[in-house]
Image (cartoon, rainbow, N blue to C red; front, side, top):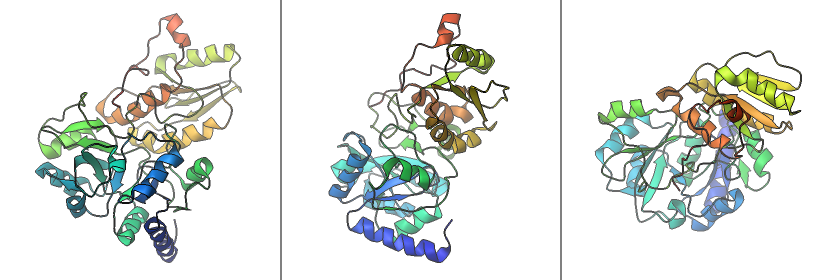
Length: 347
């Protein structure tokens, strides 16, 4: 981390870049964001160009304090204030009816806007000095693995942005929970570190799942968060057999699993934590590191089924959907644990 004085100096410079219509990559507790002045359509357009992001994919607007909701949204329900008081700063994005100041390019032409207050000192300092909202998706090419360090941003985007603020590794590691409050009933649109059960406990009511009429939000395509190397999710009981099958085909494979495996030299094993927050924190960095090592496949032990693992499973399923393949275990009667290539399409 930067010293306090150095951090302030960099934040001041970053705020000037944003005011001039530039792009700043900055850390949050979830992943690094690629930010622009949310009220400057030309600056926001640069985000879409740099990422190769489709124009109908809305962005999340990062704000410094919960009271700034009043500038960005209208028809704000009481439950939004309850959740903001409980979870902001934090990895929760609220979808609300947009105010007139929000440009169409930020919302993908929808009547809703996503808002959150990030839980990172550098992000909060930048937002305070800048004084406005920062529209920011993850700082990577569209559909690829999100960055959790400044080095990841440099490796993938190079000089495409005007400035990178280095705040160290992200401590959550996967994108925020997205909750839609724009309709009659709250709906969970994307799972994250803040779980469905936690939200229901605050609101004291059940949360619906997204339907066809749900707003488009980031990260909900069937294929997303994917390395270039094909990813396969394997039930724990079949992991060793799957490794042997791939090696028998002359393929180089890497394995991510909670269980320790003794493997041949042609296979690289990396242990993963035995709890969901640890998986989330390490997942993207591990995928990025393996993606540059010329493996034919990355085999990942399917995590347990349960509410606590929902967000990790969501990211893994979408990563595995990027390279649809005929699984070798299908010929042996081994089924996927939770539909790793199932349909998750929302937009």
